[in-house]
Length: 221
Image (cartoon, rainbow, N blue to C red; front, side, top):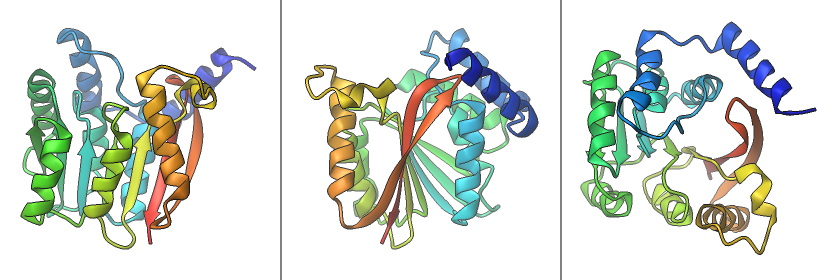
């Protein structure tokens, strides 16, 4: 089998169950318009995150890596009216684009974008007592993934769901001699996750329009 069949099946599932409305389509379109990288999650992955948020009855969600707000919109739509989502974005330009997309989706009152280095903002959130969060989605720069996860644990409670995207890197994580920073970051994260006794975790391989990668899922004990 090849990528063509995986993409076709992904589109098949998306057409049946991962419907994108104008707000989501506009968020994707804004990437090209703003000259941003087209690295958002797929519609099916967005729907998957939304279902996960619903399954854990998430009222407070934390996201690391906003980009144009595509995944933000999917997850925020699972929140109750009094729920909130805090999303962290390093690039001010990306944050500005995301803010417009979030406003277009009618979610401005529930979503707050914080701009800056996540490793600077996470300690601030902890000090402010912003947690515990019910769900945390990590989809930012890969080298510090293990550090992000440690902070995610500090902002969690028993039962918090932590999701980390892009942890298989097209299978490159199998190469112990890789010199790619993103691959090395995923490798460190995966090894740490396997040894961490504070969570029950697994990794799902994923194929489709985003080619081949994987998401880690961890429940805090």
